[in-house]
Length: 363
Image 1 (cartoon, rainbow, N blue to C red):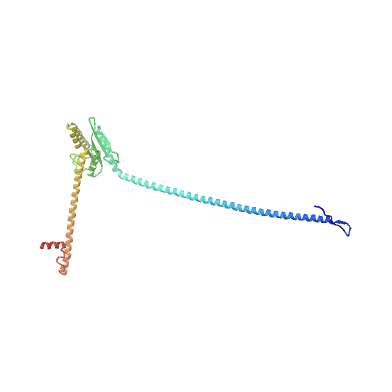
Image 2 (spheres, helix red, strand yellow):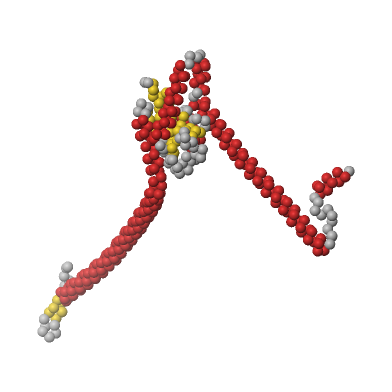
């Protein structure tokens, strides 16, 4: 800064002279310095204020950011918590479903075990009877194999439709010239339906002769003790007891008859058409249905006779009831007549149809 020398001043005491311009310059310089200092202070104050504002803004920004972070963290935690709750509920649902499946599995298992236990108890209860029947079947089959080794024995599988076994007769290098159908029964009472059922099974197999082997306690009422057998449906079905000598005798007899028939069919020298007719007449396909129909006619006669007897008994009961009602009605009217007098019309107990008949007869 340029100095200003405008005026000199003399001190009245010491007579020293002073330069007024220098003092002004010093004053001006000092004033400028103070202004600079003041401006610097103001600038520093503004700077501090700006710094403080900036710090405040940064602090607020940090607080907002921190708050935003906290909100994000809280949101993330809430989301995680929600997911955990959903996962927890899903885990609980899966566990409940597993428990329900286990309970249902135990329930089904227990139910099946109960059924098996009942079946086992039933087998224990009824197994003896079934075992006895199976024992009798195998005894018969073993005996037939032993006594007729040249023949073939076919066992009917358990649970399959039909009897128990079929004996195919072989004679002099000729196979399967005839068959005998066997049915075993090991019960205490004979059932006539056995013969009908065996005849139907024989028709299905095309077999002309069948034998029912029963326990000695379950024989028909018309069983012939002298001949040791009885026949049903002509001689198509033979009933015999479970006795080895009788079985051997009857099977051997039936077997011989069938072999003889086979020989006769071969030895007859007749025209081919007659031979076919003869074979058809002697085949099971012709004879068994006729025997079956004869048996059915017999059963129908028995049923008709029973129904006729029942109808006659019912009619007699109805007539007796009508007479009792009439007698009671006459007794009621008579009791009034005796007590009160003849106050009823003469035709009180006469039906209108009877009146018309009387009028018509009078005319």
